[in-house]
Picture 1: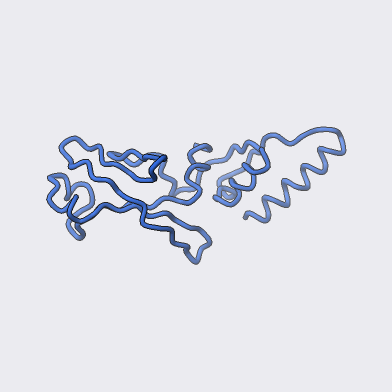
Picture 2: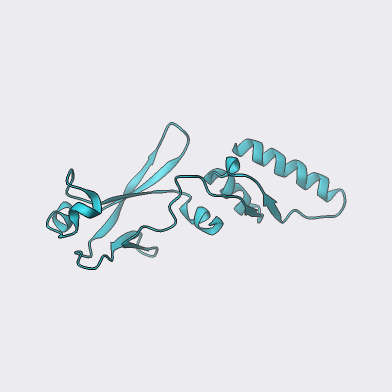
Length: 140
């Protein structure tokens, strides 16, 4: 979709420039909602108006993100206030990359909210975000 969006935008810009007009906003359906498309539009100072894709999660209930130090913090009442530290990025065959944040087992395994937070199969909490989360947040 990204190449298609870029081609459409470039052709539209050319057509508008012929009439001394600037492209400032783009309206599209969710089919064009990808991190790469949003990144392209952002780099070209074009405001986009399109729905975010279905897996987008604007907020993580019970957790806040510390942007300066790149970690999530548990804020659940009665919880242990664990930090979910950045563990790396993983690329998937469908063409997207996610950032992984994870708590330590020692922080979470004795938490009274463990079962309702992430179940009984593991002793840690994990959150995955798109590498383009800030752009999706801006769109949201």
